[in-house]
Image (cartoon, rainbow, N blue to C red; front, side, top):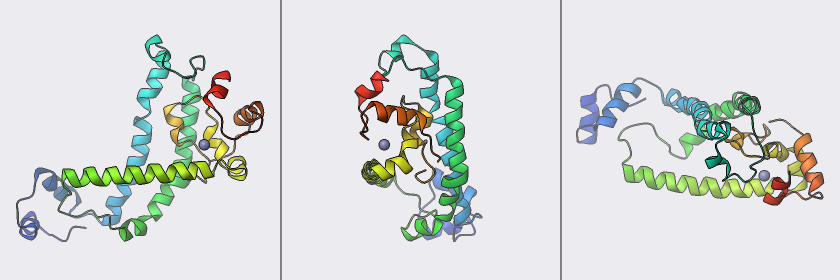
Amino acid sequence: MLPFQTMGEAEASLGRNLTFAETLWFRYSADKSDYFLYCHNTIFLFVFYTLLPLPCAAAELLRSYKIDRFKIQPKVRNNLCRMFKCYKDVMTVFVCAVGPLQLFSFPVVQAIGIRTGLALPSVSEMFWQILVYVLVEDYTNYWLHRMLHCKWGYDKIHRVHHEYTAPIGFAASYAHWAEGYRYHKEVFGKLREKSGGKYDISVEDLKAE
Ligand SMILES: [Zn+2]
């Protein structure tokens, strides 16, 4: 919750007029708790993971030659029913695991200093913060992903993430609940068999499939 009762108090504290964005943020957030504002992230999670894969899904369903010629697996077709199943499974994991985890993570967010108050960060501050977050997230995600390709991690958890061997947007976050869902043996078990038991499947393996 902002420590100001009025916009005048906020401007006096900052020593300047509020920007347009800060005015909008003040009107929306002044009487809301920090935790309530933080919970908006969970809504964003559902909205973004629903909307952002849609262009990829549309491109897949259009069956346009202009798009299909860039596909690694041009013969593989993901139909609407398969995509919807993937989306439904992802949302189930979000509701049962990812969302609750996020809601309980508020103390961590507070501890690392993420704030909701005024002044709003400048464009350059946001740029550098996002750049660093993306690099840290990408680096740690890469090594965690590699670690899960060990035999135990792959058999017990990670193979679910690779069930969809032809990429679709919704499958980006399709995984065992322990890394963001449930076991599926068939597709990857078959692929692994085909690849002689190795755990890193190459593009050629996928093309062959
Ligand atoms: Zn993997």
